[in-house]
Length: 213
Image (tube, rainbow, N blue to C red; front, side, top):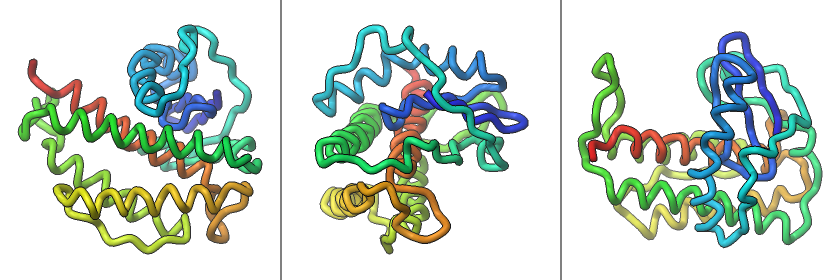
């Protein structure tokens, strides 16, 4: 796991499991949050068809500490780890793609089962379901140039367009298997896989938590 520490927020990220990242106000609390979400991430691994260790949440080891930045404090993992600059074998990149795809699968499943209007936060804030989906798609289009892509935001209900959008991103990860950035002065495909999967899951879990049952 990598620890990315800003001045106000700390992320703990399981580098072998893209999308399994949680944040808190301190390193111990971020690690605690990451461990607490192991069960929820197990659903992602299951959707990808990849065995997830039963003790994954208990066997967390810090392998790298990263200095965060303003984006970290704003609320997103922003700094790539050294391992994310290493090349991947064909099997490794396909595993990564399967896990990112599974994060989208989990998001789609949660969205399908959620009401259009979600429970508001304590101050009455928070996007409703469809706005969250639009936000995730728009963010991915914003990340796309850093992967050497130009993507037009698909309509959330257009399954064919959304599928093509996602496949283009996965293909970019495959092209970035050598560990080099796909565009100059940006991060590697492996980092962007982690960031994109985290964003999809963070909002999937938000929807779950804000759904009245």
